[in-house]
Length: 220
Image (tube, rainbow, N blue to C red; front, side, top):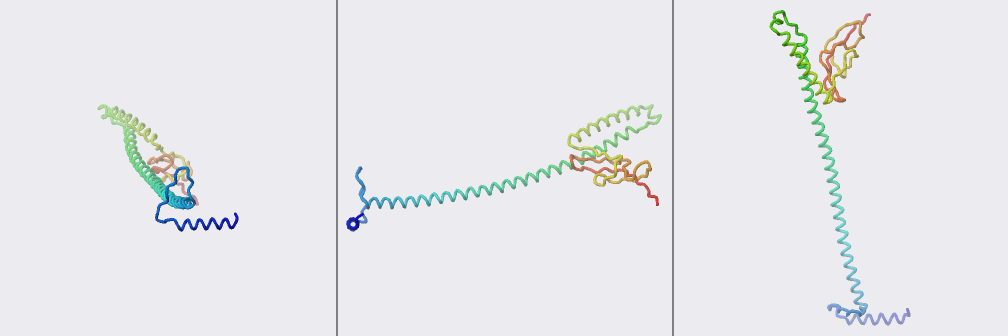
């Protein structure tokens, strides 16, 4: 642009600004009439301010939203950890209660087995046979044996199995020495008999077996 023309335009724009009343609101433009330069610049400045204000509000809202999301994430992590810990505690408590109950059932099974064995070994005297005691005890022994088998079935369904120890080498992890015996026909440390049965619950020892262990004297 010619410098002289630019100077004239600036001079005219300056004179226009000097004559404008700053307190007066800009007149509304008639439809189809192009706004003058001052009005255009004023509207652009107002629009710029509005954009800045809106941008700050959007930025603040986004920051609040991010903080809310972070708080929710942390709360979910804490809640998940607490639920996992509580679930593990409940599982341990249930497992402990189950093992305690199964231990008590094994003790009941011992008493039932002892009663069945006594009834099976009973030999009535002549007088008792005449009174029918033999038949009575024999019937009771059969009933106890049947009840014992059912009891063992119930324990088996709960994952309880008896330990197989007779004829095996003594294992201090699953057995306790109840008696010592000496039998040259068997190896030293071999289990010759069982005083009290041992049981395993799934893959864990429920009760050790009390056994008779062969102990050979060493010759010097």
